[in-house]
Length: 246
Image 1: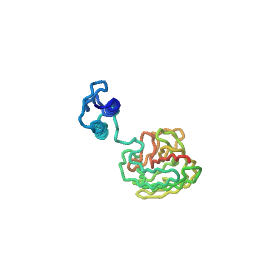
Image 2: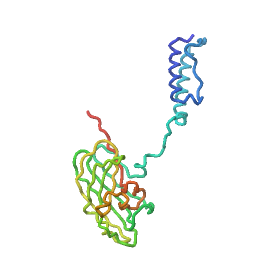
Image 3: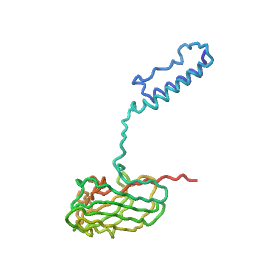
Image 4: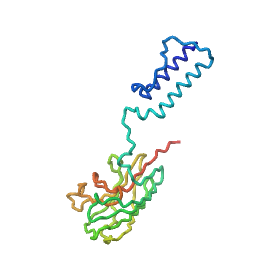
């Protein structure tokens, strides 16, 4: 006869399977109640075999059934902020080298200026100088004539700002129609705590009255660069890892 301790183990396994595998869907049969009469077995290995079979059921259910039974809808798509962006994960130095496909001009402002490439590097811990380079093309037939200041900014996914610096050497009016121009900048940045961040270009209206009106911001073309909701041009996203203290 199986010992009482065996049936208690069986009951625990049953509860675990039921919780993990949606027993309300009728996917598994219950194991014997610990208070029901104990069946006799002529084999010494009965307990070992039964317990192994129960754990095998748990494994199979967890591997194949659980995702379909989950009470909480699961989305396979990443959060919007992290779709199709140039990405990097680091604990010390950040180095990004990002190329942008043609994409659509539907969201871009006029004249159509396209972001082709961006690269940057800086230290995560403590103050350092960020080296930044941008390659932008004027794919229109007219020159960009507005005197807009271009800013680089770094925010978290909730929109909290951690860095905003004017790029004094980036003058979009210098790009000839049909031409391409490279811009370089070096600027001081602070440290970043562990977490996720998004790097963007902010090109606000030259009219002081509409500086913070996102609908008046200038949007570049390039695959997934322009974000009409925030009025920002997304360059990349990075994650700062938490380093365990020793």
